[in-house]
Image (cartoon, rainbow over all chains, first blue to last red; front, side, top):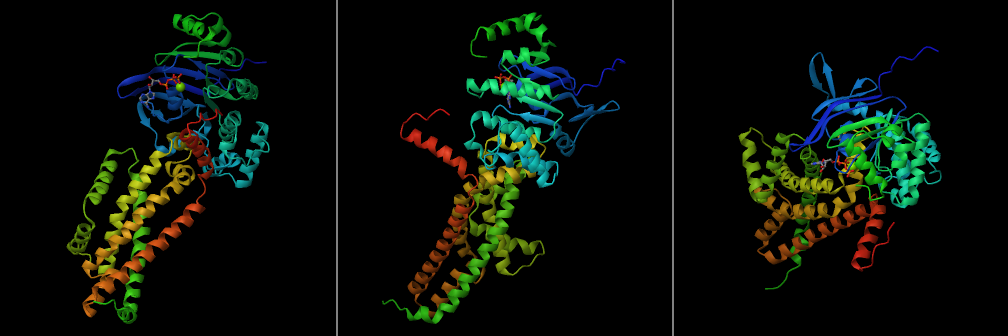
Length: 265
Length: 240
Ligand SMILES: Nc1ncnc2c1ncn2[C@@H]1O[C@H](COP(=O)(O)OP(=O)(O)OP(=O)(O)O)[C@@H](O)[C@H]1O
Ligand SMILES: [Mg+2]
């Protein structure tokens, strides 16, 4: 076998900055994620994890810095040596490539579980309806929601809602999935199921960035752990190494705090 | 003085014509006004400061001026711009502009009352802002729009009486004509009262039917109301 040349990362973030009213929240974030890689993003409350995910989708436009999805510039492009901000249409066109599962899920309550998954395919990807329905039924069944297609979100349990939201994102055939604390809104007995699901997605080769306080997930599912503090990624490495031999004292303190079983900060 | 129903027997065609014109004017003013209102509400939400300032001025101005002044401004202002419309067109236009400012505020408030995450999740899957409005935001706010919109529409119907001052032969104008011809003001105005009342009853009924049909947000309401009810009865809401 010939050694494979280093592929371009699926997600490449460089020098990303974001301030809210003059208060810097992201200060020069760098992050590369290879195809098929699962990165757990951890860090104390308020360090900017959610803001980073929101900037990656351009829900909050980053003030500065570049995002490349599969080599394609997203939001801001370097043309020659001038920075060009992309128009709304250009940004919208790449958005389906990034599946985002919000902490609060934000399912659409006026649509059934099935329609939550079908509508974006039809509206955004212009899929014929039958095809979109078939895809949605496949996904929902695969996520254990078979038979619940016609339920409205209010009639789904927390764990079922979560899986419906994941199905909605997956239906767009994203190249990258972002999860913001996928287990924090769930009852403890449901956490295991979601982690298993994420593990399965990882096994299927999905590239993922998962903000989490589940140290077990970080240790056993993630390939890499990125630790954020004060708006920067201050440590980033193979999961085992980061867990067992944290180099940064802030990371060591953070891991101690989480392992001591105190409510995740 | 005696109440003389014979007057109404003689003049009912005039009342009918007036009522019919009032209905048509208000229907058109509603459609035009609501359309402008929705556009203005959407414009009020775009990021551009200039657009928002213009929209703020439009709504603020129209809401701070009595309708009769708006009417006169349009009536005497249009000829300055070289535009000549029949009085009923001018009147309908003024009525639509007047109502549009209030409709815009109703729609804008309803959009803002929806959790931001609803719009944002639609945007992250790649919907344009308008697609997100069409597929996610509006279906959820529609039902809540009905009661305040009905209120405003009833107000507008009543304000349409002011069009009589620019000689639009609507209901109030006809009642003045009858009163002038017969010197029986009480009979004339009593008849008009009944007709306005009938019109508003019909509008309110139509709205109630519409509200019952737009059952989209209903299902979540079930949950919200259960929660509200449990607070009102001071029971601890069951943890889901
Ligand atoms: N829209 C906003 N306007 C102003 N400040 C904001 C906004 N969003 C986030 N912030 C601030 O940015 C900082 C980072 O917030 P963020 O939500 O990204 O933290 P986080 O790491 O996700 O925390 P948590 O673990 O509690 O979810 C916080 O100090 C927060 O107050
Ligand atoms: Mg967060």
